Length: 397
Image: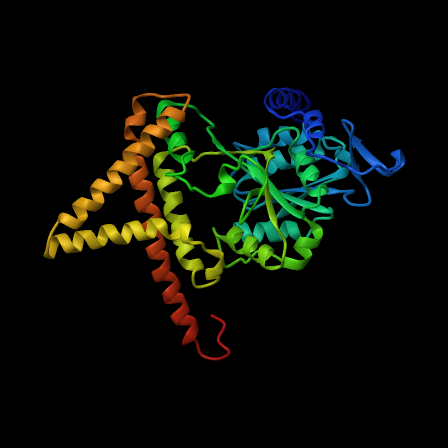
């Protein structure tokens, strides 16, 4: 059995040094629990959570080749300040047959006695992420369902802060989730600077919320059971945009998604430039495909890289047959924005090096990859839609 107690103790100390104290949350009015009898509540550091509202919380993780990251995440779970007897942990293994190391980590975690209400390991035979979340949704018992990615880190007050927000009258919540590095290095810090920038990732408010606000989507989301009962399961046709679709259906059902900066988590960045470029391309591809499945789940912001990519292609065509001036004007405008964003990203980084000089190229490559992926996804989605339209009645393949 792994020495989880030593690991979790060190993890808890690290998070306490950087996290917000719950006493301050009460002092500044983040948590305003009504008065109840002592035997009717669970008390966590003087903050009561009423059994009549939330008596069991489910923390769910879907993992595929996450053996490198799970030990730290498991230590984070053990270090949670939320009462373990009120916490259920569901682990969904998406490649149990091929990755024995990942499975063993899950088994070791389950066998260790951490006092949780329940630890369950489930298989995801379909492998894909939305199917994995559906496996978890089909097995959870909690009044609240919190989903956390397999390559994430959560502070010791993560569950507590989610419950505080929910107990203040909300049904869906999440918080700020920056990206971090598994293995620091000069080039890795340059990639981190790019991915941490609004120019490289997204300008969506939930990525940099300074105050609690209603948003369209949020990371590592906590849902009350009634929300999931009303909305249903994830659409397994969407391999990378299942969150966009699901959160759209949450909002359509009349629920508000709250991003609160008191809730904090982290996600590990892709370790290589090639991996990050491929990720952007695949993400863009599924944005394009989703337009033919649930176009309302896609915002105009998602289509900006596509517009840029098409404009570049148009400029090339015009240059070949008429004049290069439009493309040169576009290049000049983009270069100005790119350089300004690169300088800004480098200044904000606490680990500046000569590798930061590559940021303009990094930004451009990520934008082109995402835009080209979106265009490819549109063609793919269009082809699928036409195929479905002309499919003989009764045909299933």
